[in-house]
Image (tube, rainbow, N blue to C red; front, side, top):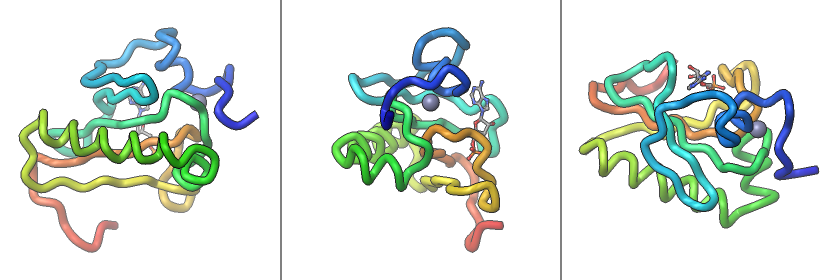
Length: 117
Ligand code: AMP
Ligand code: ZN
């Protein structure tokens, strides 16, 4: 069912505390933690605690939580003192999505090229 924890989901395991993560922020509905393979000096993932497979599914099933995730990306950027940053939701394997639990990448601390690869 939408939103229910999935036994085989890495990010559900992080939410449950079964896999460690470097948590930088937490709210009732979201968790923000450092990416294990950072692509920029600041690379934080913001996720809904509930399981949704991607950003589109999250927005459709729980728009309030989708808004919480976006609000938290801004809070992370402020805490990390980022003037400029990029929020990325890879959606689908062709776009590089490898974890099927919605997550926003917050990237900053270096120049970011546009268009991205
Ligand atoms: P994506 O490729 O957009 O699905 O993003 C998944 C991200 O999760 C990648 O940037 C990975 O480096 C990151 N990742 C994978 N395992 C972990 C972990 N245990 N803790 C933190 N980040 C992780
Ligand atoms: Zn999950």
